[in-house]
Amino acid sequence: MAVISGKKIESCKLLINNEWVVSQSQNHGDIFNPSTGEIIAKVPYGGKEDVNKAVISAHKAFQEWRFTPIFERARYMFNFIKLLEDNKSEIARQVTIEHGKTYSESLASVQRGIEMVEFACSIPTLIQGEFMENIARGVDCETVRQPIGVFAGITPFNFPAMVPLWMYPVAITCGNTFILKPSEKVPLTSILIANLLMESGLPAGVFNLVHGGVDCVNAILEHPQIRGISFVGSSNIAKYVYETGTKNGKRVQAAGGAKNHLIIMPDANLDLTTHALKASAFGCSGQRCMAGSLAVTVGEIHEPIMDNLVNIAQKMTVGRTDNSDTTNEPDMGPVISQEHMLKVKNYIATGVSEGASLRLDGRNVNTDTKHGFYIGPTIFDKAKPDMKITKEEIFGPVLTVIPVKTLDEALELGNDCDYGNGAVIFTSSGASAREFKHKFNAGMIGVNVGVPAPLAWFSFSGWNSSFFGDLHIQGKEAIYFYTQQKLTMTRWFDDNKNTAFKDPIWKQNKKE
Ligand code: NAD
Image 1 (cartoon, rainbow, N blue to C red):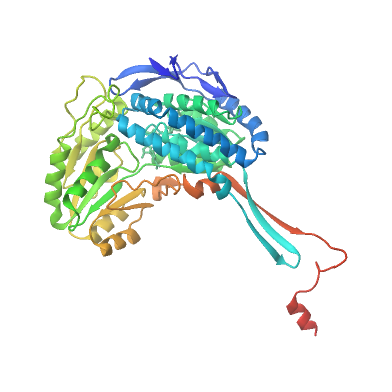
Image 2 (image 1 turned 135 degrees about the vertical axis):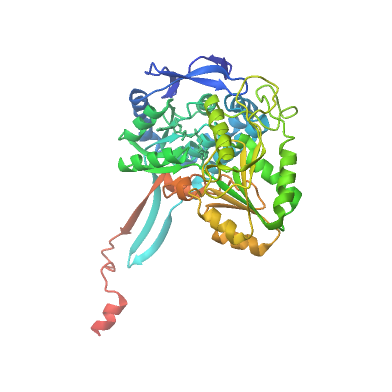
């Protein structure tokens, strides 16, 4: 049984107008503790009725919230930071219970989320417009950025606290109101954080929470009073949400999946690179959109890297995370669900049948429990460019390795990839790093950094089918996404001077 803020939760409620209410839907799904496979609570699969209630609440709140001075709006975020800091360990514990990542990983992800709220506190400075006087005689011009209305956020399972926090602190500080639909697999963390938002004093209706899956998303996509949508999830759904949302007249930013390449040059530092590869591929059990999932070794470093990597990966401990803390936790926790575990295992079977060499097989990993959804670190060597394990996102602890002879070959392989989130080079050569940085078709580049995921102050700039839209999540682009620009041109008539309609110099000269 789930316990949130000291209260037992059997089934998730919606937050509408600062009140916890029961969903109109009779259809419910299970929320699991992936460490044990136990059902810990139920989540309603809401649809139009629930979304409509949330929109009424958010739309009403917008009428006043948009005119609340921005410093006041930011002040709620200062309160919210304090509450998040004070409750950090409880939030991280909740993330671990419903998601399965280790407590250390959860704590780090909550910290990344808090940084988004810190960023939101700087919006009063960042949102300022531009002004130019005398763009014509007696005419001044200015731009401001204004809020748009009701926004909705639709989030994935893999970061229950951090990804929702990418969205609503910025959206609401900019003056919009918000409806969050978290992943139906991990809605409990959002309930806990919504309680803190209420405690921060945020006016009723500014933030609302609904639950569900496809029907709920479709109701959001169709609702005419929802002006914009932030989406994070897999690429097929991101594309669907982008296409349907924009067709319905909404702004949409939709971040999708990834297949991030890690290029290892012959001059890379062997030990440090191996550790970075391990963390990138197997951190959060490989369930990160910035996880390195395809390593491309260039030249003679292939064998030493493989030997080192297999050696350290096979020593990784895998087990329950729900009963451990930073002092006694395993290196890796479970994956999110039974279904996902089977999907990842199927990919491993596919890799074997496609002819890649399975150097480490995590399918029958030893753990401290008989239950739960576990897969150990898995490494494929000598994969080929056209294999499924090379091209598709597996989203589990599976690293595919391809040896090539030159950086050009590695770049060609990388630029053939449908995705374009992150790409990393390990090298001690500035020239190789520079060439890679310039030529690789991905939005976030690492040089000897295994997971080049940007912090809150920079935009999360995925390319290709890793992102659909124009303005990315995080950083200044997020402020542009959640606001629209208004331009005002002003002329004041001064009857005594009558300068306003005076001819420009070039016309006066012509007359002479
Ligand atoms: P998902 O696409 O299955 O679900 C994401 C959201 O979409 C959920 O809220 C879900 O309810 C909804 N959804 C699912 N199927 C739908 C459908 N058919 N129609 C409408 N809505 C639907 O993703 P997931 O499995 O929860 O998360 C993992 C994925 O998210 C991976 O692909 C990962 O790379 C990606 N991700 C991307 C980023 C990024 O910044 N690019 C960050 C985190 C995760």
